[in-house]
Image (cartoon, rainbow, N blue to C red; front, side):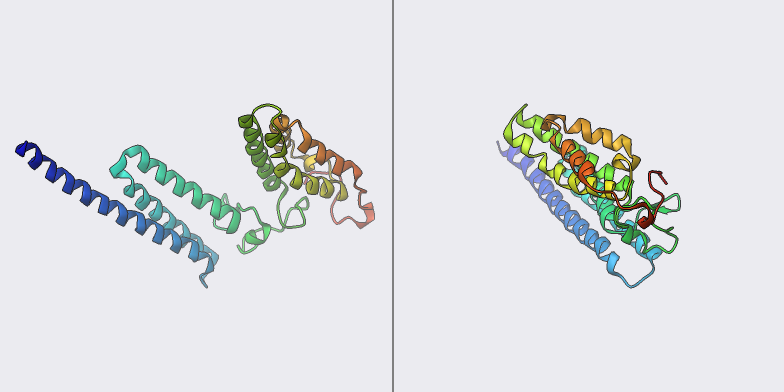
Length: 234
């Protein structure tokens, strides 16, 4: 029994030290992640902001991964993955920090305009704020989420069906804008639109119906008042 107790003591001390290191890595990761987010407000060029953001965020992901090593490689990998995905989502929705192939990838056109190399807004953008591909792929994602929720609640479950309101509300506005600006259904973005339709089956397709009602009940803008070429995908 004495030998067993003596063997447990070093193990307990080792576990305690590992716990302290994990906490230190975790706190450091959060701090560096905060610096990454704060870099968006720095009074420096977009290029340097982008470099600062991704350098800090990658460092934060590594530190958060190290904080989970003591609980297993799988948990460390999950921590790193969550950090990377979180950074990517933040960069896409709130900054012009994702630049691939010389083009800024961001949800809001106003964020992209902060980069001096960004071309003018596409003519089929929504209110010159969101590009058509960004809008429809995000709607497809919302559709998958609401459809999955409805399926998890069970077929014809009222709660699941009403969950489709999260998709129907933006679709009503988008349907109105598409028709008003004389664009075809979904402004020609038929792949994400198909995903929206399929994902709304568990909600009895009522979000899709809302889109078509808004689309066909809207009076198109007279052609002479349009600032783009109607019925033509840029």
